[in-house]
Image (cartoon, rainbow, N blue to C red):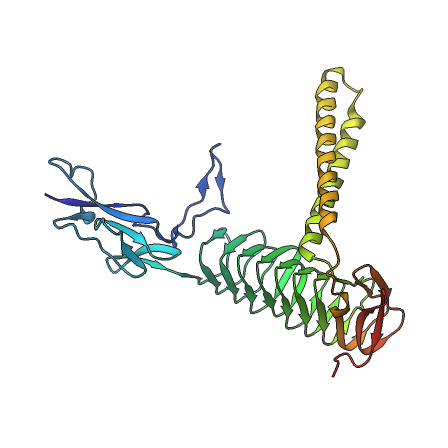
Length: 371
């Protein structure tokens, strides 16, 4: 009796020949090309089924077997108690390699992420050997990018490393559950659960570091929110009309959530104002406009409640005396520094200083690095 391998993935998948996914309305999504076949540990990849008499019609002859033996390859396992079912033994992507079904853990994207790849959501670690172009989105467990990150969206459960740098064009959003490191950072929003490390300059960006920020070059025109301390080696502040601020001592993740609420509240205010401006101009539309306005008002009340609850959770670390802003180089006038509720604006040129919290005030001393 012949047997047949039933696949739970596309055995003919080829990432060199991708097609945009078709939406329900018939249009196509040029950002969704299905670049990789994800699989998670324990997922069924294939099974052997018996083929009865006359059952071979319409079955791919490549996957017809005379003996019920699965083509087991790397990082797969036979289901316990069921030798005819093949499972993934790790998170990764599945494909055929020399006649065997294998799962690979690290996804190497050996080109730029652009319209040839589309967005790439991946369950394992990803390495991009080129750049990530504007408008595209990557998701992975951990991530390394060898080229530049443009105005793209990147997210990783663990860390993200960009060996080159970020040229965000005020569109880049990078979120790492642990650490983010890059060569330089310009015009981007970066959110990291632990530390943010910039080997060069950090310019005109918003940084949310759940632990520490370290910049080896200049930090200019940035909003920085860090939990414990910030280190800027060469220069803090400066530039024409480039406001630079650092806030330490509060949970940056909660502050980020507060900023998102503020943006949504501002949008609702505009929607309410727009609705009210058109009420009374057309009797036929008045009812719909009033219903829309009332809906916006209800949403606004809920968001304000959420904001109040959020600020009940936003509190100083309780260890404000440990917070430091460390600058071995120079500090330019106009830099704003906050540690917990204390605030200080730099009014003169400073060199080799550290800022710290004492007696409910921010003070500074030299040298920057305490011995």
